[in-house]
Length: 159
Length: 252
Length: 219
Image (tube, rainbow over the protein chains, first blue to last red):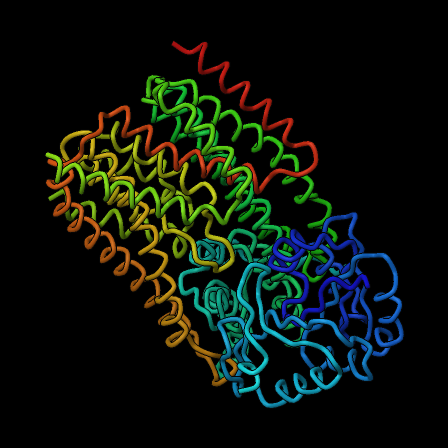
């Protein structure tokens, strides 16, 4: 299996991901799953800026990503998959496509109606619903901003 | 590409001045958001927005934002352009969330991880080579500020000229590749600093011979252990000073 | 008199660290020289600043993370070294600098949580220009006050601790420097480690050789 990280982070590709996780995992492909981004070229140009030239960045809609995810798991390219929200990750995982893998919640920020789980993790009821869907789809969910940091366990997120 | 609308110099100067306070109210809720709105206020006033329109405009710029403080000027320039062009609030919102990550990552790599330690290493080398403390401090400040101020002022202009199309323009600057080259220079300077300090009693008071072996071991342990050794090292240093004083008092 | 001047300097350098300007005059090398001038001993000021700079080379104000705050720490460190008689002064200065760097980071983090309460939140309510300016200004004023407080607490502590160190410190000036530089060497190694990739260890080795050479050639 060569998906080395599944991460939910509103900021998508940014310093923590590229330097923090990238420095530890050495991926050679980032896949960003987001319907709006998949259709917007100038935004893609901006997100590509964070990544060294030799690393590939792929933008996919949720529907396209569902088709392709088995391929990413199967091929030899070390891949980081990023979504902006838990719902998109849950859609990707539905039906067991990510079974047995760990989903990392790395950055969901303050918004009205969201409760603080940790300084980088705020969730509302819809988010918790999506976390339950991820657990049902056979993934292990936890919060963690950087590789060295302690994990926030799923029970604490669902409280 | 539309024609670049002229930005009145007085407005530009006030935004650029306020950009020096971009992190004035850094917080875990909107991070630099308030600072961004504060910096753009002169422009929003210049555009003649009133009441509800003004509050909407202030509101969209006061939302969550975070980037490297110097490179935030690129975002300020581009956002000023979008407001001048009358871009939709949705475009502005999406631009803000797309640009913050790259500007943060670029700045961390170029400024914090490379240029700042590189300039500090130059200053420290000059100091321990006995060139004179004043020169060491001046060299550090001049070198560092050259890039710092360039990023702020040219960054703002680049952002204003390009608007949402700033991505390819930033890519052309090849900042990441330059940072890679800077990192090689920094590695050399770090080695040089270790070597210079090891040679013993320089004019500024270096290491006496009896400590050389310990210093080599300390350097190697840092090389092998990495960042996780920093906190224990600081604690050990403080603890050592306390303990030596304590036992010195008891013995004396 | 110099207590007040140093407190003011500590507060100003706190602002430079993150909130106002970030010209990096708050880095230990610069802050050490300035604080040294204020207390009338720039040579000792630079010495303490240079050692603290070595320790803090890996510490940069990156992305909202917690990092030792250099400005007030260096001011207090220099004051401790100058005010404390005997070779132990520099030791107290460096130790105080490290402790104050940590105290600065902790209080800064507290303030960042607190700032979130008075900056306007556009996701909840309409935001006026006045609210933005007031919230922003208040946060900067508080950062100044925090810097003054941290510096004053540090200065008071080192004034109290100084006489004990003067009486108890058994090491010579050279041995004191040696002991303190051990920690600085670990820190230098850490910086090297964060940069090592591919064949850069060759460059590092060349740097060490060049440094040794320069050190031997210098008078």
